[in-house]
Length: 378
Image 1: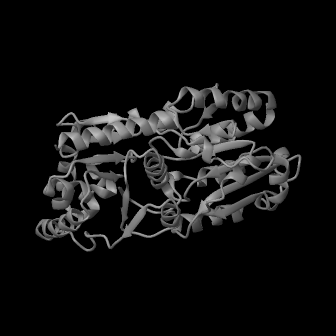
Image 2 (image 1 turned 30 degrees about the vertical axis):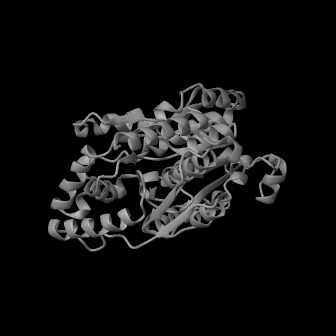
Image 3 (image 1 turned 90 degrees about the vertical axis):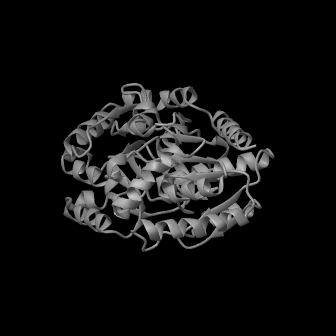
């Protein structure tokens, strides 16, 4: 099972939960390979799952002949692991798909990205980008996690091997051990504050600057009655710009915005929150939306790709247009002013979540495809 990362982020956590569940059931014996280290490595190893971290075989490679040589070498390494099937997580692992093809091992490719396929691989140079697009022909199945993402990639479905398995959330892993009052107190939140949460890696694709810009348009009466947490910060130009925007807010509002570094301890922020905001420009079927519903939060979000398959406007959330902070400010003001609407959306969260793919249904679907892929090679 080849991961794009060993961080506590969406796609790697998705893979981790599938691997652990199917290993517990005796369906698979996973070996995890990744080209970068991270905290999920320890989590895997605590579950008795072997993790191999090695350099990226495509490092500094931009020409087809060098790429072919790298794939030959990498495929021999893969062969030495004596695996029966390969799972490649995200578009970043296209080279894993190519290596599997080279040695005749069945492969399943899990796509979480919704960026345009026409340009996604351009950073590798035209020759390798073209080969990456060819790789969609090779897997037993290319699994998308949202219908909208699959639809964007349909022109590449020349071998009719595309399918969709919507992400399911392992509710047993959610930490609800503390009550909201004690959690809010530990975060310095006043009892009367309305807590607004944005959670996810701080970056341009996730668009957290929309929230800060929206605060400029928020009626002054709310300036001392809200508390905003932006959770998931990591060093970047975008992060610096986000901090700069916060510093331009009125003094009273500046003190109401807290930017929190990436953390595995996200439960306390969900438990403390009253409103969840997703500001993403590009997503597929984001985990954070599922988690927000699991914590009974009303949602304000952009209606991009698979989010439309998760959030029902007026039922469990409200939509605003990406890069339109004025619309976000209006939606925020609506939920701040209308507590009964906020309660209605929150109360409906569990029903909408129940209508979506369960974790058990999702893992069973993956298990069936893994077994089919293996049998197809026999």
